[in-house]
Amino acid sequence: MSALQTLSDVYLAQSRYADAEAVVTRALTVQENLLGSADPRLAPSLLIKLARAQRLQGRDADAERTLGRALRIAQSAAPPIAPSVLREMAELRRVRERWADAEFYYRQVVVLFEAREPPEPVELASVLASLADIVRRQGGRPGGHAAARACRRAGLDAIPAW
Image 1 (cartoon, rainbow, N blue to C red):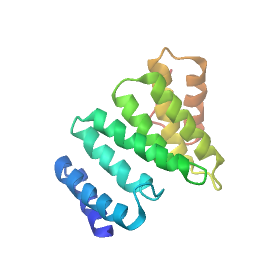
Image 2 (tube, helix red, strand yellow):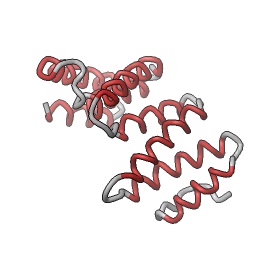
Image 3 (spheres, helix red, strand yellow):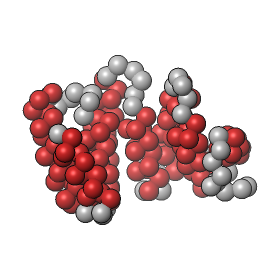
């Protein structure tokens, strides 16, 4: 299984999105046969890769359905939900310029990252930078400035200076 996941990563890096989708679909089929179609271990890895391959081919609706499935599986698992599922959902919403939806998912990711022990400041800073950008695009509500300041405190310099 690991070989298929590695091959899909290579295809994604080479912009061979249809090939990546085929490999991930094959790996997903194997996993579903072994674990069942609703096993929580499917969501964080394979379904996210499948959705990413679909999105990069311009098939946003398919990616959204795949991420919706990943989110349902993750929600049925023991808490907390894998931040990777929510982050990918936020990214899809950002790409589709659905700012309020993207903000909703990014805020959930922030809560999960802040609750981790030990915290992951680089990942948190990256999510906060994305959240700050989304807030800015919606008119720069005051929370956007707080997110930008938090990004700077976490050491992420590549954010807009408002």
